[in-house]
Amino acid sequence: MGTLKGKTVLITSGGTLEKWDRVRGHTNLSKGNMGCYLAEAAIAAGANVLYMHGYFAKLPANKDKMRLVGFEGIEDLGDKIRTAVQEENIDIVIMAAAGSDWVIDKVYDQSGNLMEEAGKMPSDEPPIIHFKKAPKVLGNIKGWQPNVTLVGFKLEATDDADFLLSRARLRMESSDAQFMVANSSQSLYGEQEPHWIVPATGEPIKVSGKEETAKALIECLQQI
Image (cartoon, rainbow, N blue to C red):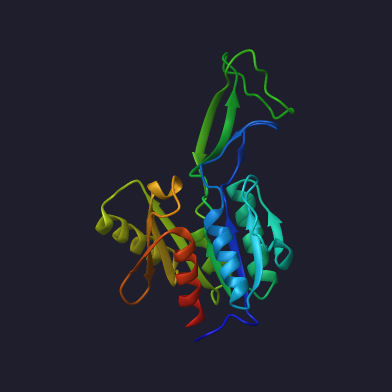
């Protein structure tokens, strides 16, 4: 059996928070459970863990044995991953965080006037918010550090396993990842939903539940 002793694993966890102003913003339903399970399994396998967590994400039970770094929006997360993989000896990146697909571009009032950031938007009338496409951080990681072992996650709102796996393989190819973990959006609402660990070569491994998936993924990473 392999080991992760002496290796540093960067795990991202939870959802991004895209701020509209100083007190409001949008996020997603990710709570960071999978990230916690991955971090605990990596620690048990002997790894050094750098745990990057979203604003509302849970922290692992053994957080005192890890280095914790918080992030807010998807751009902030990307900046922190880039700095870590370029300035530190990161062996494995597991991108379990749920990044936003859209970030704030501009905010206008009801008269069409641009609202500059000034603490808190007025609450007497709804703003008009223009979004823009968020950067895809996963696809940039190998460009920042080609030697890192990369694991991505692909969530789709589908019960069609074949479609889900095909989408995961496309994401794996575009990001040059070694593994993808594919799961349905139903996993946001329960702990025991099926996940598929999809390697770059070989057949997918179906696992039931988040904790068991985390353990199985870390076992796969111990073998490379």
